Image (cartoon, rainbow, N blue to C red; front, side, top):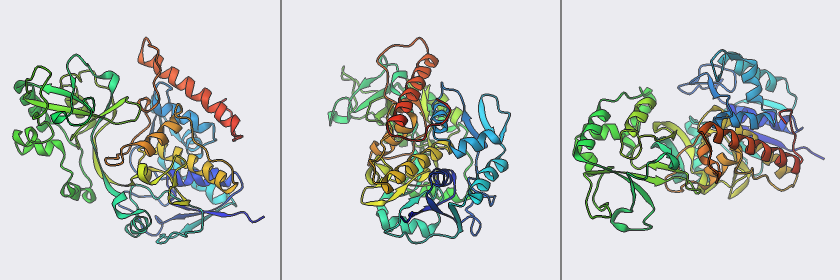
Length: 444
């Protein structure tokens, strides 16, 4: 029997993790990477799985969604997590690494494995018959962008993040907000509205226009001209730009018929109604400033932010339209995607999708039923969010407990609740692994 070779395009966190998962199961992998020939604006090293921003893989605690995700990945002997532990540096409760040692650990394993062939080449075509995993990352080369657009449709390939903050529904004070759609169009519960008085609005705008912003890279500065204006830039053009824009009160009168001076609208962001985004709040503010300004809004004094607003260059596809729950292209079953290009945000999240896609490739090749990870697990919740999010306003997501199905019971504290989420997730994952005859590592 001839063992098929899988083509993986991109040796970042998702691509290297997928190559590892496939190679250790006996599959042959061609791993394509361009960086030794052409580096993108943020790449510095020749080694693979380069951490181009922070050297932190964030929390290890099971009271944090990313901590749970790491534990789940260890059940599959994750190369990325093993590399992180082998290269860790002191960082309190976070898992931080020596970025050079981290990348070298991964590169060495792949270089020395006989099932992996490393190919320094810019891919410009996709073999329509070969099994292919596209993990080309958030700064895909322009030639390969064109290839992906030709495959999937130009309108489904995005060039930048322009995301508003997302908060948890259970952190909203419903004594100060109300449900209503503008002009009562659609379902009355489509939006949660946070009304502002004139004084509240003017105080908030003053805080907004003086808040600190994130410095943009030169290659990101054209983004504002793509129809993606940050709310703080709009505010600096004058108060009326907000009152006739994102915070327009017209058609949002309260039940008593009064029209607020301004209204911040929250829109449901997930199918299970646990997350809400702030409509029109695309922003480039620093994260502490976003928290301060959001908590100044009536009803959001205790808002729990699960995703901060961002505006930066980031190639990603419209996964809810294009991918199924196996991270497989709906119209091209030989092609899979993983990593930031599918709309996950973060190092660990990218690697996790590399595991999921690799496992489904093995099932596909072995003609076994494909794997839908349970939504109670963080791995399953991420994929569930990615493939079921809004098709018209899809934005990337990181690991957080807000995307996991909630418990009905009440908990004394957030930590108790999050530990219960983690305990449930790991128990369900154990049974999922056993029932599907997957490799189970020592964490259980």
